[in-house]
Image (cartoon, rainbow, N blue to C red; front, side):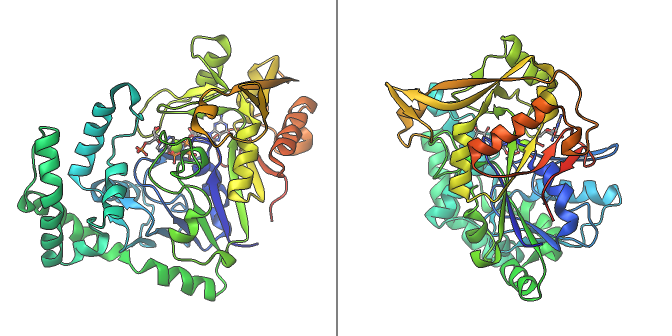
Length: 428
Ligand code: GDP
Ligand code: IMO
Ligand code: MG
């Protein structure tokens, strides 16, 4: 058993939280490496169900260290809400650590997120409006504030003042929005800093010490490959590197310590927000409606209805290459039990040319027409199956077809939201 990077392979919400929670007990530590409270990862153990935004999905295991890595952006109020929720439920957060180098989401980041979206009008991205883009923007512009800055009032005030010198004119002059004073933000943030003080740590060193001591780490990605700032459907993406490479820069652990890359792949496709999606089925079609409602495809973070479509093998193959997948967890296979036949996209046609990998030019991807293959359905409930042999033959054939298209073995098949509702095929 080895350290593993867990990544989303489509447009998010593939069931990363479920699979992360399922295997977290095999690891000494789970670390989130990018993103912020735009993520919504569901974990369900029996009657208990949580939608996690910032806390890693290993929190249910008392001996597992949970780390929010330096590549993440943190909304302190949301983090404290999550900490309080777990403590109330008797789930200890004493093993939670937050990188001092993670950037802080400020109130003006959320204001600007909304303002940019409004300005884009018909071209808006459909962000979660959690301030993610503007926070990463400040990180790159080198005017961001980090968790470590919260620990020293003088430093916090000084850096905040400099940030506001750049942010306030934008808020006021470009968008006609209210500005902020240092006092105002300090009144909110400094008490939170005191509560968060015990959690803030040098997580790069902590993680590397764990590696040196032979401990196993699970790197938990948020969002997904097609939402990655470099490899996704730009500009309809999030503002971080969600792909496996982000695990290196987002934690400070060297890549030689990451042996496996587990891609979480839904048995069909969903997307929330704007941007191209070649296999999309309108909600109004019977198939689109069935996928949405049987799969209960509504966002954990914003409650928005997710767009649904047939499985896209071109994306699967792309995700396998971009992340270097060694394994796949195929999720929500149970949802396809509703169909007589199931379509799978095996290629795109774009301007008379056939593509079996994602075209790099955004216009080509936007105009991609899917080439479908039709596979027989199984028309039954598979949510009680616990071994591959118990699956009906057409469901087994579907899994094998996914493996062929992705060029990667399917090591887990998920047949329901609960931890137990999983077929472990090839994972030690
Ligand atoms: P994440 O963001 O990748 O962690 O995924 P989300 O939690 O946002 O969305 C996945 C949803 O599907 C959640 O409601 C899960 O409880 C649910 N889920 C996960 N795996 C399965 C599965 O195999 N079958 C079904 N029916 N639901 C699942
Ligand atoms: P998890 O981790 C699905 C989408 C938004 C929008 C785009 C940019 O639960 O899979 P942002 O607020 O990040 O600037 O929005 O990315 N998005 C997600 N979609 N799952 C997520 O997270 C997402 N996080 C962001 O809908 O299209
Ligand atoms: Mg989600």
